[in-house]
Amino acid sequence: MKIRKNDNIIVIAGNSKGSTGKVLKVFPKKNRVIIEGVNLRKKHTKPNQANPQGGIIEMEAPIDVSNVMIVDTKTSESTRVGSKIIIDDKTGKKKIVRVSKKTGEML
Image 1: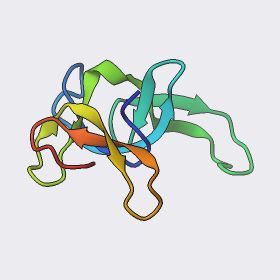
Image 2: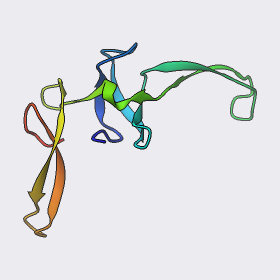
Image 3: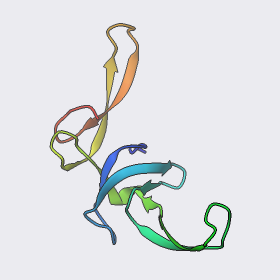
C-alpha cells in the first residue's frame, strides 16, 4: 500500500468525491484508510464516563484505498505514486523513496 498516515489525499470516487483530508489511520490488510472529515457516519452511543449524555456521534468510517489519490505538495493536484531506489551518500545504504509520477518529486 502506497498511502501512509499523515498523507494529504483527495477522494476520487464515492459519496465524498472531491473532498480532501489527512489520513488518520491505515488498515493494510483490509486495504482501507480513515480520512479526517471524510465518509462521516452517525453512531448511537450509550451514556458512559467519557460521554455522560450519550446520543448520536458523527465519526469517520474507513474508505477503500482505490478510491483515494495522494495530493502532490508542490502542484496541489492528485497524483499517482511510484517508488525509487536512492543511495545515501553518507552511509552508502540503499533507500526506497516514494515519488510523485507527475512531477518526479519525493513525497
